[in-house]
Image 1 (cartoon, rainbow, N blue to C red):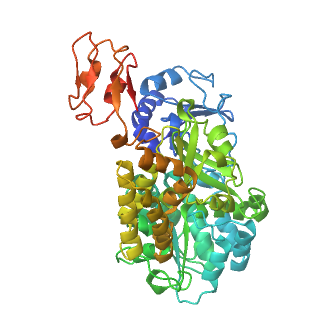
Image 2: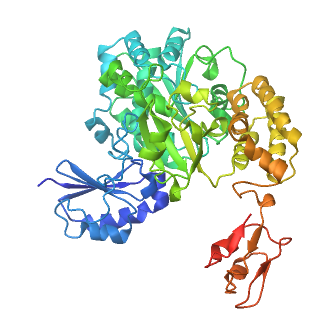
Length: 583
């Protein structure tokens, strides 16, 4: 019987959920057992069930979720086979989260120890770099990427091969390859998971790009808020140099290429290429007009190619398997797969990778398991704060660039925030606009001042002080901000407002005209009351109230002072007989 391999998901999400103590317990349990190998791996995507432990033996594996040190002890007690003793996440018939996926970018995440280059090599790692350097010309590499149909996964969807071609043809005594790992969308964690779980795929993708365009230097621009990702990348870079995959005359050829990390301060605007370049150069992260484009004048004025983490992670797979293998997935204009971070009011939140063209319904219900507490699906925010809300009526929209853009949203980097019937759409628009308003670099008056005015209007509406003319003002400001802003942040900032006005204008009208929040979220527009016929006078609500707004005697009906109440909802949570309602 082969050795038992025990894998513990030790990405940021796993560690936050308690994977550290689980690993330590398992480490104690397997000490001295030659039949068991314990290893740390990245996130396999089932974030809703962290901490995760996978046990593999004889080519079969079982994944165990919500692991604790106590469960870990039961799991390995005198264990000699794969007899399941806990919930089998992968084998359970109700779990479709893994089975419906096509994992290209996430092919190694959760399977290998990201800090051991040998495990990456065992799964074909760096074979694509070897193939590129020893068997393919620069033009042939670029042609493979072009024919694959791969488009930039950072949001814009520009053809990756075409971008490489521009950088290849640009004249310069030196060139740069930049990996944009400045993932800043609320609810997005795709790039972080890849950097933590499979850093060598990014390094190999960058090296192949460097060879293709004639660059000798690579830069990974990663926000400092990703300490574990940076740790794993640094370790991977050291190992790649030791193995001869980075440095001078790589694999005995005339190609020399190396990579260093530039830690960003977490400015959302630095996800925009020219602002990112300014930050790399030690300047304030602010965008500049284009042209010239980075392919001709980028880092330190040199020709530069910039791709995000997900885009680069596809490259080794495409070179190894051929452009046709990649292009078989997806639609006519959107090839391959896309990684999404499922978050919000969804049962099985986590990281998924699906073929382009899959309907939103399948992503949310078949893979994500549907809405928490089986509530009604209301909308999904795609593209982060620069994206838009897609309503339930459009749930069968295919996930591809053209179809998503047609709804008014954007593909973005892959954030997918799911909302249920209890979500206030006006409040959601206010939240995303407050994010982009704070993250505006301030260079463009339309973005700096226009988003401020829009945010003020949305705040007034949520506070019950909105006016009917506010809706027309929002519709007037939005196109001016889009047209008058220099970079993508300002050009897309009004999207959440425009899409919510388009699909949910009735909720705006309810806030303004009726003084009601249909979702019962906006505190200024709701009121709590106690039904005296149901109240048993247990005093639990009064004890839970942080401002002493509830009065009444024991075993007699209680009352809420509306003038004092702060609408926190603690009383409703505390009531054992559902005597408190909100209107």
